[in-house]
Length: 335
Ligand code: AHG
Ligand code: MN
Ligand code: MN
Image (cartoon, rainbow, N blue to C red; front, side, top):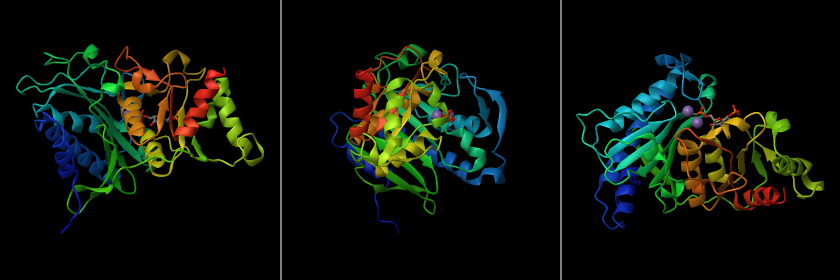
């Protein structure tokens, strides 16, 4: 018998301290947790159940969809649509918000999600994840349209991700710190294993796709050049580098041992505004990082304060250990 705290118990106990909480949020989160378990199971079985490879279609971003992108999206929608707790669902994999079937009741929340993050890693058996953000539906809205989702990250009720790595983990914030849970495959429950996760303020580890370096802006180039210069350079210490190409895995590493993650704006992607999506990647991850004592910025503004203009908007992302992120912000100020 396990005697740890399950994610459900944890959320119920956390919600007890919130005035006016009705249990709706807890019930919604439970279904998100179930969706993550189903996706984890599909990811774990991989080629055995024929879920690897391309789906032969493109999403709204013009990216080729993997079979698991499509499956995970479907799992998320089906797990949540019936609950009666949502007035809207929107996903990286769908052009427009999902129309909730008319037979289901509506609720006060909206969920925005990236069903499978890092999907280029799927076929090579490297960690992937799911990212989600829970928002409140605007007053009186029962079938949310794209504009109803356009709230700044500061309005999020919950930000979370599931990481499908050597073990499956769920990491969550509702604005009261960050907690991590590990899936016990034998009993099918996420158990609290990483209470109150905090990002160390300093780091000697950076994560950036170096192949884009010739396209970067001067402040980012300066920061990375100084990291690379090591002990005898202006930073006076040696740095290490990682790049998994799964944001979930990078953020999880940073929550565990510190670091800085950057997908900055560069000349190649300037017209798109960035690489990562504001609503379902940058905002939930920024909420988690800030709640763990880190910082998250575009280089010029706090990500969570951006007023979104469209659902699939992209932004530059620089997040992680406070002191390093502040250094990058300072370099942007200096030009
Ligand atoms: P997704 O698989 O949901 O499209 O997201 C992939 C993202 C992110 O997780 C990762 O940090 C980045 O794209 C990797 O980009 P590069 O391939 O340019 O390194
Ligand atoms: Mn993604
Ligand atoms: Mn994705």
